[in-house]
Amino acid sequence: MSNRGGARPGAGRKKGPNKTTLKRRTIAEQALENGLTPLDYMLERLRDEKEDARVRQTMAAAAAPYVHPRLAAIEHSGGLDLGLKGYTDAELDAAIQRAAKEASVVVVAKRKSAKK
Image (tube, rainbow, N blue to C red):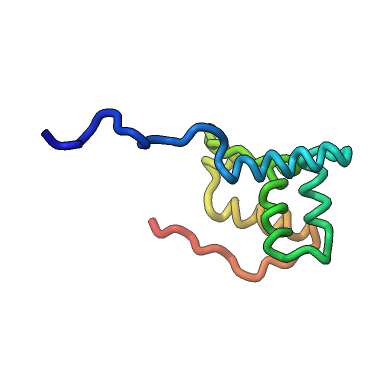
């Protein structure tokens, strides 16, 4: 019989926190001892011009979600109705010229009329 599958001595995740978790906890504890929240600590390191650029970049990336929330994607659900249906091309061109004249704007190029 082969040693495939099943429980094996020494296999699996080791008990206790890993190095990254320990480092994160240590930094958070040091910050709290100094009266800082983790966000305050990150912003302080970010603003320190003597700090290494990589550390400052890491702090900026870590602090960004707390300072600048992500914008939610939205879906456009309605149609855009400008109320221009039923007008001829000539009537639309005249309306554009009138609006441009009222706004003191010169319309340089006329749009091409649709061929019938």
